[in-house]
Image 1 (cartoon, one colour):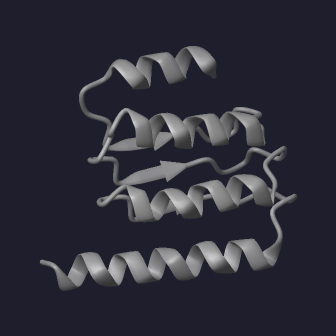
Image 2: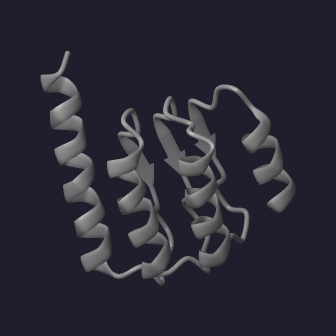
Image 3: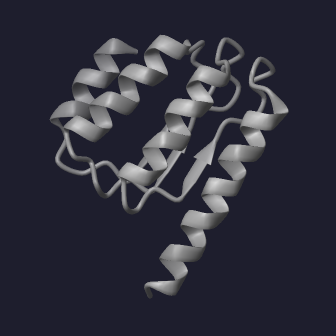
Length: 107
C-alpha cells in the first residue's frame, strides 16, 4: 500500500480511489488522508475503502475529517468494515449528506 501512496502522491490528477479489500489498517488510512491533504489532491471525488476488516473508528474519523478539507470529495464508502461502529458510520453518512447538499447548492 505504501508503494501505491507514492504513486498517488506523484499523480497530477486523482478523481477516484478504489482500494477495496486490500487488508488496510488504520495507520494506512491515516497516512493516506494526510497525503491527500498535503499533496493537494483537490479534485478527488470518491474514496472506496470497503471490505477492509482491520479498519476501525479511527479510520472513519480520519475520512470524515478529510471531507471538510477536500472540496470535491462527496463519496466515501467504508462498507463491510465490521470494526467501525454504527455511530461512526452514521456521523460519516451525515457529513456526506451535508457535503452533497452543499455541492448541489453551489451548482
